[in-house]
Image (cartoon, rainbow, N blue to C red; front, side):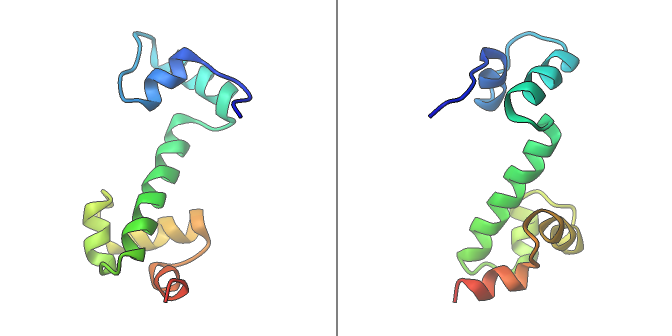
Length: 94
């Protein structure tokens, strides 16, 4: 069920953003989702990393594939967002 809809936010999420200032996108995004577009992107990247880790890929490869600068960056990000390290995430799936 959709609680609130916004064409500007929808266009941003589909990768075809409407013409608007960055500040307008940020305000609309925050109003609709309760978070900034940047925070949303960080969560999406962490979700992608978790999915890749669950396939059994090594953390070093997941870091590259998910767009992290290096493996320690992946570890810090997943610990902050997911509350688990890559190793802990892989162990929960075994």
